[in-house]
Image (cartoon, rainbow over all chains, first blue to last red; front, side, top):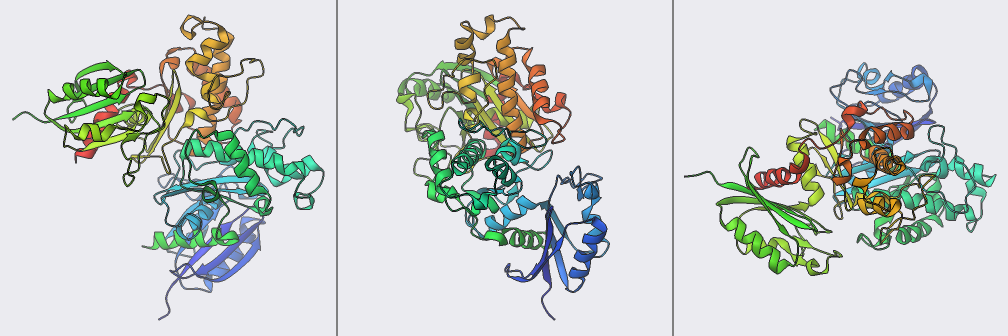
Length: 289
Length: 289
C-alpha cells in the first residue's frame, strides 16, 4: 500500500496554492487556483485533493482568521476586506470531504513554520518571519509554538517613524502611515510613480524602504529577541535591500542589545517561495501524529 | 518538621527586595537592601536567607542578563551601565551558599510571572507586563513560558512617534527619543520641569504620556496579541493615565484587530507592588519541582 500523503493549502488573497507531499516534506505535486469566491475556489481545491490519499492537511490562510479551538467560529476567515470570504467556514468546508486532521493558521505563520522546520531557522529555538509584498505580515515561533493570544499577530501594521526625506503620506486604509502603509509594494509604487521592480537599485526609494523595514526588525528584536529574523515576500527580491536593512538596523540599535551577527540574524528565507507549502506540509505532519 | 520555604530576590537598580514565602505564594517575610556593590549587597542578601530553611530561590534581576543555560556566563548580569555589577556572576554567588535550585530571569519577567500566576493574567494563556517608572521594561509570557530567543526582550526602547505638540527631544542615552526616552519618569520630569507626581491630572504631560504608552500597547498588540496587557510601575500610579491610554489605543487601532474589551485588556497589576516578589516565589516553586 502506498504511503498516505500530506496536503498543503496556502490560501492567499490572489491565489490558492495547493500541494501534496511526503513525510520528509518533499513536495510531490503542486497547483494554483485564482482566489475568486469560496464556492468556485473551494470546489477546485476539493477536486484537487480528491485525487490523493491524504492523512492530514495543513492550511495557511489570509486573514484575519479565528484560531481559537474552543470558539464557535474556529476555522473561519473572519473580518476580511475580501467580502466574499467574510465569515467563511474554511475548515468546515474541508471537513465535509476530508475527515482527517486539519491544521489551521495564518499564511505567514505557515511560511514561518516552513523556515523553522526546514529553512533559515532550522535548528534554532525561535524565529520571526515577515513577508513584504502587496501587504506586510509577520509570524513568530518559539519552541515550535506560534506566538499568539487573543488572536494571531498582525505585525504589518506597527507604527513607524517617517523617513526625514519622505513626503509620501502612506496608503494603509486603516492606519495610513503604518509599516504596511509606508513600505508594502503598493506604497513603493505610489511614492515613486512607478513599480518597485522598475526602480534602479540606487534609487532613494530603497533607502526609505530599508529604513522602514529596519524599524520593524528593530521593534521585533526588542519585543521578541528571536534567534533569527527572516524577511521574505516580493519586495525582498530586490538584492540591494538586505544590506541596507542591516545597516539601518545597526544604526538604530546603537549596540543596546547584543544580537547574533547581522549576516546571520537578518536573512531571507532559505526555502524561498516554497516556505509556505513546506510549512503547511509540516503542520499537516504535526497534526497527523 | 517545618515546611521548607521559597526565596525571592527582586534585584533592582536601586534596591534589592528579598523575601521568603510558602508554596501557596504567601509572603512570610520581606526586607530590602540598597543596591551598592555586589560585595556589600550580596552579603546582606546571603545573611538574610541564611536565617531560613529554603528549598529554592527565584531571582528577577535588572539587566541585561545572560539567560542561556548552556552559556559560560549563564546567571551573570552582563553589560549593565551600573559598572560595579557588570559581568557579575549572580547565580554563582548564591550557589556558594545555597546548593538548591535557583530560577533566573529579568525583574520585569518576574513581575509578569507573578501576574500570570496569581494576578491580572491568572487563568489566561498569555500576558505582557510593562513597568513604567525610572525606566521602561516589558516581559511576555505564553503558556507559562517567557517570550525570549537570543536574549530577553528590551521592550522599553521601541520606536515611538512623537506627539505633535511635544517639543521634548528625549533623554535615552542610547536612542534619545525611544519609548523610555520619551515616557519614563525622568522624561516626564525633564519635559515639564517638575516631578510627575506634582503635575495636575489635567496637565498636557499626561496626554502625551498616554500617547506614548498607547503606542507601546498598540505595537505589542500587533506583535504578540496577548490575552491581557498589564501596565505597572510608578508612573501608572497616576489614576488618570489608564483611561487616557485606552482612549489613545482605540484611536490608533481603528478596529483593525478585535481585542478583548479594553477595560479587561489594558489593566494595572492586580498584585500591585507584590507582583515581583510573588513572581519570584512562583518561579522558585516551579524550579523546585
